[in-house]
Image (tube, rainbow over the protein chains, first blue to last red):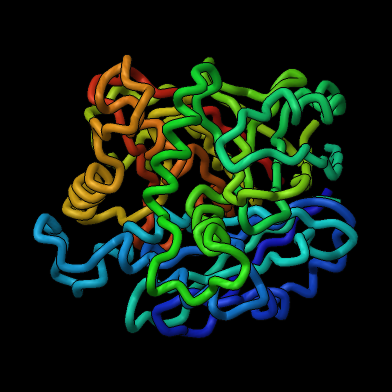
Length: 140
Length: 140
Length: 140
C-alpha cells in the first residue's frame, strides 16, 4: 500500500468549462506506478469546481456555461455578499453545486474512465488566477 | 490493507430515479471480507448519476424526476449540443449536478448507512442501455 | 497504512448553512497521527448536506440559504411526497444537489485546505435534531 501526494497548479483560465484531463495527467507520471487504487483530486478554492463529463464535443462545455449562468444568476436583489464583484456570490454557489473534489479509480497505471469521460475545471470567476489541485493517489 | 476492484453492470432502466442498493450488494460478496474501509462507486457515463437518498417511499423518487426535469429543461433556445436528442444535453448537465461517484464507509462487512439511506441510479436518458459502475473497496 | 473510523454527532442546528470546521476538528484528535492520507466524512441523513465553501464572511452562508430556497421551492403543485411537511421533499432534493459526503486530503496531521475553505453543514429541515457524520481516516 502506498500514497503519493502532490500539489498541481493549473494555468489560469477564462470563465467557462474546461477539459483538463491532459493537463492533470502531465503532472502525474506517478500514476503508472499504481496497479490498483484511487486518485483524489481536491480543488483548493471556493469559486471553481471539478466535475467529470463529456470529453469530445466543445458544444457540451459551451452549453454547460450557458445553463449554469442562468441557473445561478448575478445581481439577484436578495444577495448580500456583493463587494467582490457581481459574479462572486454566484461563483461560490456554483462551486458547491458541482463540487470541489473528485475520486477516480486507478487500474493498471491509468485512470479508469468510460469512453466519453474527461475531467472539467469549471471556472466560475471572470479573472481568476492559477488554480491549485491537491492530489492524493492511494493504492498498490 | 487490501483492495478489491470490480466492474459491475447495472441493468438498463427507464428515465428516472431508481433505488439500486440491493442490485449493487448482489454484486459485492467481497464486502463481507472488510472490517473497516471505504467503497468507491464510479459511474462510467456522462448522462446518468449516482446519489444517496431516501430508501423507502417511491414518491420521493417520483418527485426527484419531476423537479429535475424542470430544473434542467429540454429544448432551451441557447443549447447548441442538440444532435443526439432533446434530452441529451440536459442529461449531461444533470449528470454533473448530482455527480457520478459515491464514497460509502464500510464497517464490519457492510455499508454504513443511516436508517433512511439508499443508493440511487439517476437515469437521465430516455433509452439508455446497461450502465457500468467501477467499484473499488479499500480497507482492512 | 492505518484506518481510524468514528461516528461524530453534530449538535442540532436551524435551517441554514453552518460552518462546522472547528466542531469536526474537536472530534478528530486522531488526525495528528496521520502524515498523509484522506478523510472521508459521510453524513448519515437524506435531508441535509456537507459541502466545502467560504470560511470567513457570514453573508456567503446567508446568500446560500436564500438562493437554495428559491432553487428548490416548497409547495410545488407536482410534489407528491408531502406528508412530512412542506420543506421535506425540497430537503431531500437539496441533500443530493449539494451531496452528503466529502473527501478531504490529510497532510502532516491536518486537513489540506485552501485559505478560504471550510466545511459547511447544510441543514435543509426546519426542526432537525442532531446529525451524525461517520468519519474514515485512511493513510500513513
